[in-house]
Length: 235
Image (cartoon, rainbow, N blue to C red; front, side):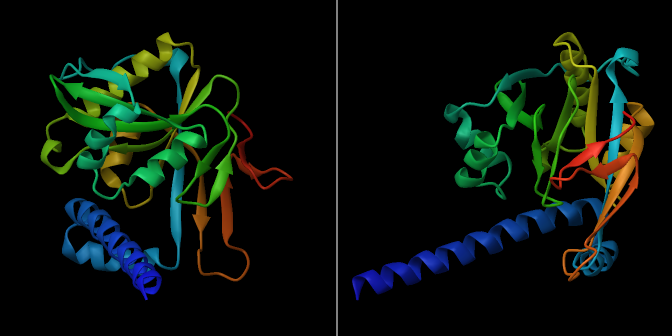
C-alpha cells in the first residue's frame, strides 16, 4: 500500500511540475505577444514551428553603442543552483544537470549581487531541444542556445547590454563567430540580434512535430549530414 501510494505521489508530482513549467513558459510568451496573438500562436505552435539560424562574424563586430549597464559574468556552478531556479521557475535541477552533462555551459550576468540574466552556450555538438536535433558548429564557432531575463528585470536594456558585453568577451576568448536561434514570432530577439547587433539570418528549420513523415524542412545554408546532425554549409 505504501509503495503504491508513493508511486501515485510521484506521478502527481511529475504532472504538477509539468503543468507549472508550461504555465511559466506561457506567461513568458504572453508577456511578449499579448492575449490575441498568444491564442493564435499557441494553435499554430502545436502543428508547425520555424526557427531562424542567426550568424554573427565576430572578427567584424564592433559594439553598436556603449552598454547601458555594467554586467559582471560568472560561469554557473552547483552553488548557484538556487539563483537559476529562482530566475526561471520553468527550469529544474534535472534539466540543468542534463544540459551540463551534454556539454553546454551556463553564464550568469550580475548587476551588483543580483543575477539579472543567464545564457546557455556550447562550442561542440549541441542538442537543440526546441527542434529535437543536434547541431555541429565549426571550429571557432559558439552557439547561444538560450537567453533568459527574469520578468522583473525586463524592459530595462539588460539583455542588450549583456549581449554586447558577452560578444566582446567571446571575441577576446578567440571565437570567430556566434550562432543564435530565434522563433519566427519572437520579435524582440530578432530585433536585438539582427537590427541592433548585426546578425544575419543564414537559414531556418521548419519543424512539424505531429507529422508522421517530412517533419523537417531546411532553408538557406543548413543541411543534415548522414548521421542526422544539422550543419551550416557556407558559414
